[in-house]
Image 1 (tube, rainbow, N blue to C red):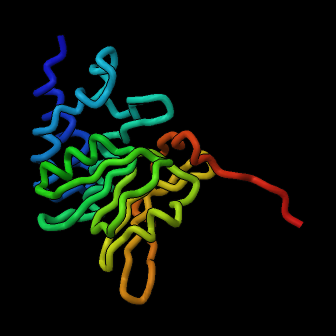
Image 2: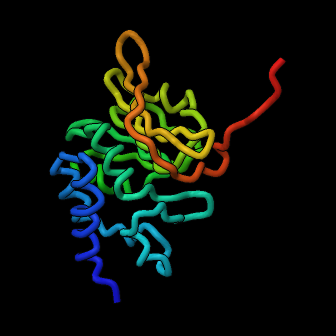
Length: 187
């Protein structure tokens, strides 16, 4: 039988704190949230391993390290409004940090309104324009973009002057079903 409490503590100590995630609020939230509840029962033992875990067909939880680093870059703060796109575990961590979270699956229409924090667990070839358009001024989107073997986690920030984008770290999550790169011919 798996001791999930010990597994959570070990996950934070070995996969999160060692990766420059210094926000102790994220550490505490990840210690509190039972990650195994987001994966099929037969895969509960995989919830704390250093791999992406498929929770539904074509949908994965990011590695603990990757979701922690993405949330650290996003800096969710109480009083902000968050949107989680195919991100059940990240949504639970953000809620533990004190933010209300709206959840949608990738490919669904986004709810009306603007968001201060948007996060997606899983890779896309490029962040859809609808996602960046849903950012409030000073809002942040954390997403992994991937067209080849290596993906990059990006932080998009909406400023009054427009949209900025910077890479945060390399990672290798699977591409979400329906968000694969579209290759064509160039003349």
